Image (tube, rainbow, N blue to C red):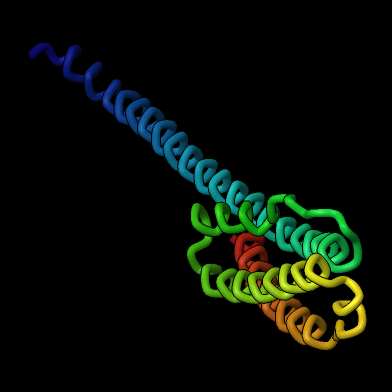
Amino acid sequence: MDPTVSTEIAKLTPVIIGGALAILGGLVTQLLAAQLNERRERIKIRREKLELLVQCLYEHLHWIYEMRSKLIYSRESYDVPSPLDKAWMLQKLYFPELQEALVEVAKTDLELGNFCREQRIGQLTDRAAWLKNYDEQPYQILFGKYLNARNIALVKAARLINKYARL
């Protein structure tokens, strides 16, 4: 080799290595940024879905009030779908750790619904006898169990929201 060619190559080597490192650094930065953005987006979606689940639990309380009002205190039927169905869907798709809490909410919801339907049957059978014998206390006991189960589910959901807020 010619001494001038080898000196020129020696001069260009740091430039070539620097350029390669810059390209490699740019690629690594882009990959890391993409991973961080993807992780942040997943956390954001889970947090939003968890907020929807909590909203369903609050809507379900209103649904319980409406069901009681319609089935016990009026002659109207109540065929409105429960918001708990949407909460179940969100739990199954995103939050398996909340299954136990939602099972307890569903159990107490079922007890409340059965009580209200039994009262409706009593009304339809003999309204005067039903009015004479109606006792609010069993409903209040069941409703207290429901509120307790619902509050436990809300506390567990709040812990998850706090977890996602820290990530």
